[in-house]
Length: 341
Ligand code: NAD
Ligand code: TDX
Image: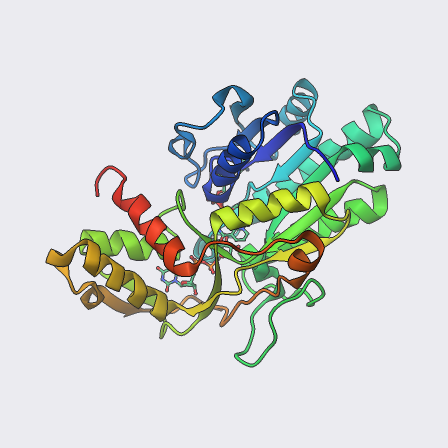
């Protein structure tokens, strides 16, 4: 079992990164975090307000493509563990402008891998064995690298061939391959997790579930792409964060682990569910389902994602704890508690 001490979190002002920082500060007594985030349109210091154990958290605004900055942070904070969330994350933006995805997701991951390799295996002179005993590079990825499923297909496992369909998923797939290669070629102590769709507090308003909740609460039309029958496998973000921590501590190096909710929903059924819950919270503006509007489909829209998380369960004793019913209610109530609602 591995015990992280000084962690560099990249992208920790974004949705999952901020939840992970909160999770780790609350669940451990001594881990220190340096949080590197460029604060693009997607990141916000609002996501880091009222952190528990503030004295163990240091925020730095900067770019994962900035090698000098990475070198300085890794040295100054004596970083033994990197947890790499930073990415361009929205599929629709990758369709209208793929360049930023290639830069941050591929070049940024490469820059981070190089900084870790040259410091740990070069300057610090660690052998592969001692680096593997005392360092971790945890790469956060997505189920979208596996492409799309038909209704009758089995869920994605760790051995499903990669078949990315959007510039976003192609850039994440490229970064996964680089991470894998740094293990096989240089012995860098890497682990990768591929997770299904997350939802919960601090998610950016551009994503599906926040869009449905915001639009519903503001009486605006709720855009459903295509016929609304596309399927995603939803996981509450705190369950993802617990899974990442399990893999950092006890995951096997060079392996990939699929993390998912075993919780498949058609988009339209989620919209109906959220509308029904909004009806109970805001009876005066019921029924919210009148706001549903079917809009032009996303080009190349993947039909279905589903994760088989058997490896996480059998090897690491991890399972989702939050039911979809309570996770969605918590998420709606979190939005209702924010200013403006
Ligand atoms: P997000 O867009 O909410 O956050 C990304 C963060 O990265 C932002 O704070 C942004 O400012 C930062 N960032 C972007 N470019 C940067 C750069 N060049 N240098 C430093 N920081 C930069 O994304 P998220 O939903 O929290 O996703 C986090 C990670 O998890 C991503 O790698 C994503 O691919 C992966 N993932 C997300 C989901 C999901 O459902 N949201 C599911 C599986 C995997
Ligand atoms: O307004 C919308 N209407 C709609 O019908 C939006 C924003 C989305 N959708 C549909 C498209 C998808 O079928 O909802 C589904 C979910 O869409 P997104 O929230 O954009 O997520 P998705 O494309 O599935 O990708 C997400 O999960 C995997 C994250 O954004 C990725 O970062 C992650 O890797």
